[in-house]
Image 1 (cartoon, rainbow, N blue to C red):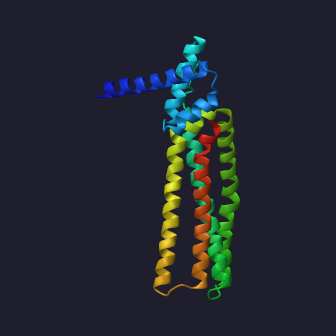
Image 2 (tube, rainbow, N blue to C red):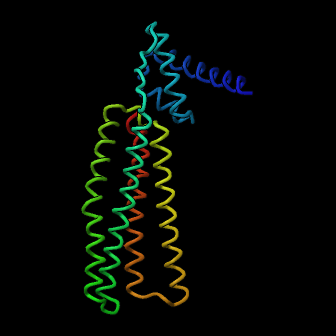
Image 3 (tube, rainbow, N blue to C red):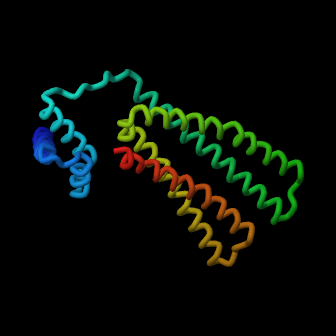
Length: 220
């Protein structure tokens, strides 16, 4: 079964490769060929493999393959995991600060020492963790700029989809929480503001990483 699927895959790549070679000989630009194939529904991976195969036949040489460094995947996993962990910490701290501000301004006055203690703890998390998050993201973007093929990394895609999944659940839960309070008549100004804080933070993160995940389409 696996051998049959492999043969079918190779046959598919071969047919795309033949098309690319013929179109290239007719003077059609590579960008146009790529868009035509993409519009027909072929995957980025299939097109890239077919282009590589066609170019190897045209120039009569095998495309050089960079030597793989041991631990490359481990390094990538480390960077992405730490970036998402720090993301969760600073975004939670930011949301907590917003909640504290809403409680202080709208709800019954809080004990001043307890209010200050909660605010200080969340400010400390935000001040320490947010720059660390930015540092990890800077390293990730630097690696992507240097090695554009990493946009296709399975680690990048899986962990980013996990982040999207979690933020999507938070947004959905926040909307359900809001609608439930509205229907039961328990909606207050403080509740609305807190709900908006959660929606703004989680929604912004979701949109940012969704656009970032689609960055591979721009870099092709």
